[in-house]
Image 1: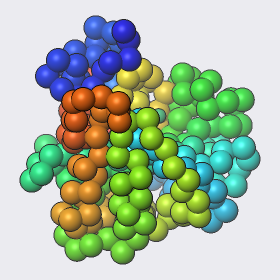
Image 2: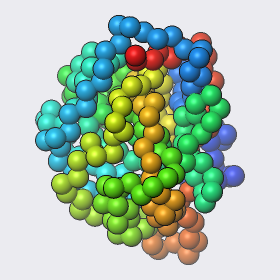
Image 3: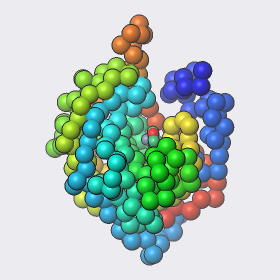
Length: 261
Ligand SMILES: Cc1cc(=S)c(O)co1
Ligand SMILES: [Zn+2]
């Protein structure tokens, strides 16, 4: 059936095109960002995330990643500015990571990958009535990408890693209230931006990507807790650990990558 895609040898990124032809589209993500080859665009203003009124609802394991969902019934938490011509509402955030000792970011910078990558997914509720509609429309989504490098413990990430044991199995979900993702932002909001896609099937080409240049630091110990998650369900005999859930860089196909100041 269509929804058995994954990151293994039998169902991984190189095979997704068979079920999802968009995989070979003209604006696929992630990409390799080559800083000295891109254009600095003085018209690009700062991005302004405003999450202070956000309402996190739950944390869940969908078999491909772990995601924290937000109440997106109004404009209480949005990102605006930069390449965006409307405010985009925060819908969810999730992570992509590697195996032990391996890097697992999706975007790379001059061929270098980071340990992990956090994606904050937002949608344009001015132009579209629902998230689902925005997710299939050109530029209906804006995803803020943040690189994670290994170093010291991240002061706030434990709030998330301490909850992961509750969502060990694919299909599990548990309450996760009162989490404000602004604590996961690095100090600098300088960014690169380009037009791309979801990095997982159905790979819709609907994303304005905003990738922060400055990574955040998390400890190997904190990262290892993500690898305890299973991509298999509680009822399955096979237990497969969730790791290396990243898609490799895709062809740029002539797209411009712009840089904020
Ligand atoms: C909506 C969405 C976006 C990304 S980037 C992902 O990995 C899964 O779902
Ligand atoms: Zn993602």
